[in-house]
Amino acid sequence: MIVVNTETIPGMKIVRVKGIVQGNTVRAKHVGRDLAAGFKNLVGGELKGYTELLTEARRQAIERMLAQAEQLGANAIVNVRFSTSAVTQGAAELYAYGTAVICEPTSVQPAEQV
Amino acid sequence: MGANDAIQIVLFFGTTLFLLFLGLTVGTTVDRLHRKRLLKRETEFANMLVTDLRTFPGGAETASHATLVMGQVVIGSDYLKTYLAKLRNIFGGEVRSFLSLMERARREALLRMMQEARDRGYDAVCNVRYETSNIGVAKRRRGMAMAEVFAYGTAYRSTELSP
Image 1 (cartoon, chains in turn brown, orange):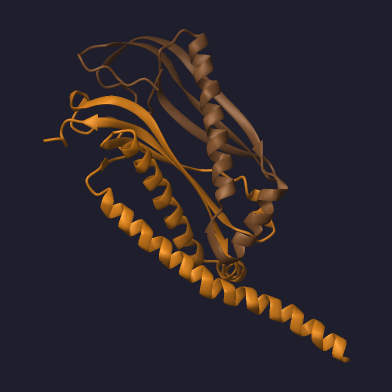
Image 2 (tube, rainbow over the protein chains, first blue to last red):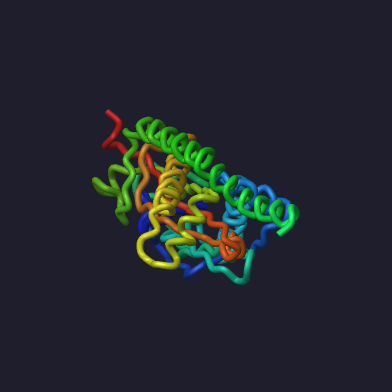
């Protein structure tokens, strides 16, 4: 599956648009991470626990989007966008969406598979 | 006023002063060292073509192997900065203490995205977008501040760059 956030894929031609696909996840942080973050908030610096949490959540949202695209029989997703919203205190929704398409190579260089 | 009251007053102001001092010393050092690291890494990535154009600069025929790359970072503020921002809340105006925090977070997220692109063998990134999340929103209400920045873009191999 090719995933890009541009409208076109270099070396490929979009032959069929399958429609919008999306994936989301709502994540809450836990107390253990809060403790470390609370200390870090006194002296500044990266809150690694939160970084990991968000990276992991983002990956899951993408995977769900990919699963949807596969179900539609698409082989690429173009124009991928990310969005976040705060559902409640300490929980965030991460949302990924894009357009599932079927594409064909136009030249000798194929795009890399994800 | 007894000795007990005096101890309580000292504890109350002492803790705040200590935390402010901690912010001033450690916080400022962390900030400075991070900036230094950012600058060093940015020079390492100087030959990477990163744009926020919606298409491939130089045309699609100069690009190949496109894929999505991402970078995420959460940076916490220190006590002094949060305190200054609270003071600023009374009078309004620009909160300078958080400017540097947001700037550092954006640069770090972009660098991580570029690092991922380089690790996977790409030499250019286009259509870069920034996104902020707010998992620490509850914390923010209790007076803690953090910058959560996410950068993403389409990495590709550019024939314009390679000789």
